[in-house]
Amino acid sequence: MNDRLQDDTPGYDHPACAACKLPLAKRICMNPKGTGPKTCPTLNRQAVLANANRAFEDPYIYEFARQASRQEAECYANRDQKPYVLQPTKTRIVEICEFADKMNYHRLGLAFCVGLSNEAMMVEKVLSTRGFEVVSVSCKAGRTSKAIIGIPDEEQVIRGREEAMCNPIFQAELFNQEKTDLNVLLGLCVGHDSLFFKYAQAPTTVLAVKDRVTGHNPLAAVYLSGSYYRKITFPDK
Image (cartoon, rainbow, N blue to C red):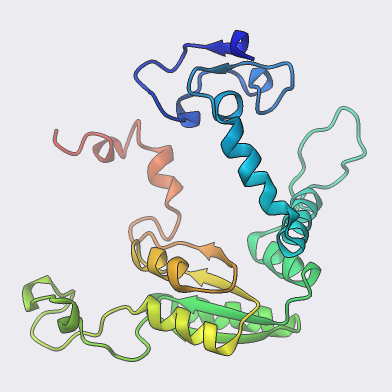
């Protein structure tokens, strides 16, 4: 397969799919007759791939991945048409509900930021109306002081009073204790979401992430990184 390697991602010695310049139709990951750069993991990380694929031998992982792929396809309409043009039809929250149904999940954990309390109330209503039992926990639950992680007054959001920290570990451990089938994240901060993923035992999906500037649409800044939001690409200029 080495004859398929092309050096079009100079400067990289590790997987760099985001820097691949090949059209999608010509990439080996999309086309069995395709090619890839020297860093292409499809071509040069076969042992890692084989080890990863062995995970699907676990019946639960097999079924989880199978239902996820089924759900992906069902988000597009009229797939029998030829030639096919993508026609997306389902929102993220509908996807989550349908996937949970496919997996026969009944108890969902909703971990949310207190800043999105109104949104959490609406999400809880949607989930419970569709028949799920929802265990919901705010990021400030437990009212653990930021002092325990060494945050001085000048590094608090609001100074001059004790400030409760976001406690994603508490959220995760509560869901573990409640034996949720699937957890849904809504607006947890950067870093806090990572801790939740680390400590949660049940699979976790994300409904929405926080972006305080763009109304929780973080790709808006990415789309405009070449124009109105150039500053995010060149912070020192």
